[in-house]
Amino acid sequence: MDDVPLGTHVTGLRLDRAEILAVLGAATRAPSVHNTQPWRFRLRSGTIDVLRDPERWLRVADPDGREQRLACGAAVRTLRLALIGLGHRPFVTLHPDRTDPWLMATVRRGSGRPATVPEQAMLDAIGVRRTQRTDFGPGGVTAEARLALRRAAIDAGVWLDLVADPEVADRLGAMARRAYRTRMDDPAFRAEVARWTSWADDRHDGVAADLGGPAVSPSAVWLPGGARPADGQGLSPSSPLLGFVSTHADGPAEEVRAGEGLQSVLLAAAAHGLSAAFLSELIDVEPVRTDVHRLLGRPRRIQAAIRLGVATASPPTPRRPVEDVLTEDSEPLPPV
Ligand SMILES: Cc1cc2nc3c(=O)[nH]c(=O)nc-3n(C[C@H](O)[C@H](O)[C@H](O)COP(=O)(O)O)c2cc1C
Image (spheres, rainbow, N blue to C red):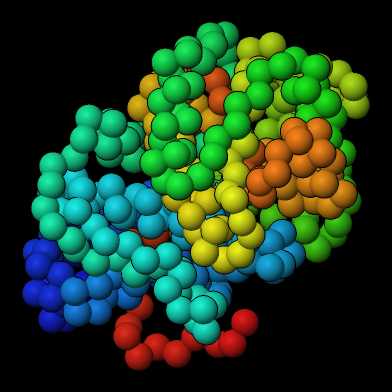
């Protein structure tokens, strides 16, 4: 790590070198589709910029970059928390320049303050939060945990709707399976998934094949044992709680905010001993997305769908070293 070039920015940020490496290392623990880690961090005097990485944009699964902005938002939330953990109150501007489609956020150091109790619990969860890749076990989500999850969402400026009604959940399950089949019927989608399925031990991104690779949708493990259920079959009774993160408006800044809110909810869940799996196909595939909005009857824009429950934690996925995610001030990014 001694050779990571941080230049003079260490002084501008008033963080020492070890602190910068620590906060950026924490930020890279954020979730991202297929574990693409589609972010770059640029150090400027007094500022850390969070950027989308054009080389890690999933053009098939995520043609308009929405999920990439969510992942960058999740990294922003983690960076924020890591700075709070060092006693610095960060000052964050989301998507500050409408003419720059790559710049997702600028993070400055604000005044100092200690972490609150929930923030400290989320901080402690950064290294243990994992996407659940196998089925959930028995055990429900307590009322206290549900409240904490909703509060975590609100603190990040988004909404979390929790759905426990078995009939609604069954219908959502059928929709997820329909959407999953639509996606997997697309050879370009399957090829993109294959590129991010890792067979090599020394790879720092993607999802290992023995974890199922990114191809395994939570809807494929909707029932215990990974059985592929037919439409109309019920949700696994052991993981009945679904969560939907939504924003008031559409647009890039709201998507970054949604990513912040998603990570806030995921970390709060981990802090309460809960695991979460994604159901992105409910949001990504039309006309399923419209059906989901209609079924849930929410006026807001649903940005992420997760299942929550108690589970044996899945193994960790790798991350790239900090030097790989740092970018130089002058490095030009291509037009979108
Ligand atoms: C916006 C977004 C959408 C995601 N969608 C899915 C999904 O549909 N299926 C899935 O298994 N994981 C999904 N993930 C989780 C990633 O696969 C996971 O974050 C990544 O592999 C890193 O693993 P970790 O979360 O355990 O650190 C999604 C993550 C993000 C941020």
